[in-house]
Length: 96
Image (cartoon, rainbow, N blue to C red; front, side, top):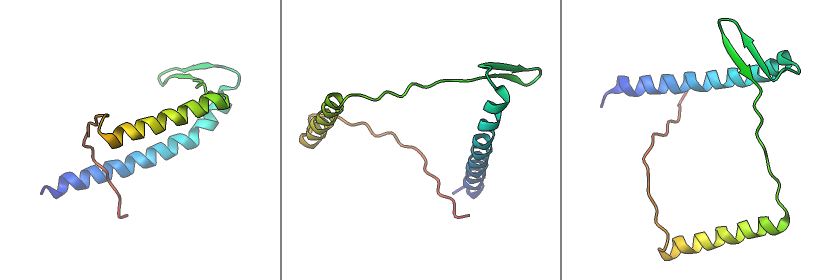
């Protein structure tokens, strides 16, 4: 087993988590700096754009239909009518 390979992966995953945390801390400050501007270009850095994501809230009848569909899907899985494909991926849990 190539220990260095695993150590490098672990090091990068920890760095990634740290960077994501730092970015998330800066986002509200960036939004404040942008003010009412939906787009700000900083020379030599790049363009910052305010994105908007729609979040829908559905009436109870549609929520119930969705729950009913989930139940039907689970039954199809149980009966073997549904097919499944497993895709392997790496999970890393730091001991540090």
